[in-house]
Image (spheres, rainbow, N blue to C red):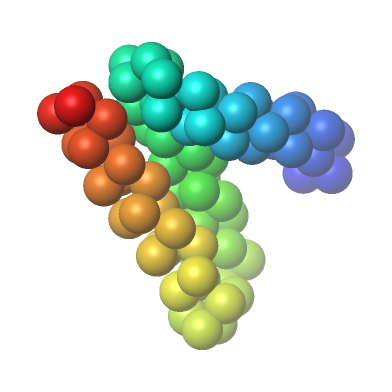
Length: 77
């Protein structure tokens, strides 16, 4: 998994920038928030496979939900 660290980090930064730009262009914000949600869900699946304790998964799950809410809000604006 260490080989994908640069790719994942780049995608996270691009997703954050897209969400910020979404304040001006809503579809771009929805796309960025959806991408971040996907990255977080994939990260959670890795944590589940490595049998991490649930207390370590809660912050990521909350952020995934917040990004999903952002997708809906951007699409409705």
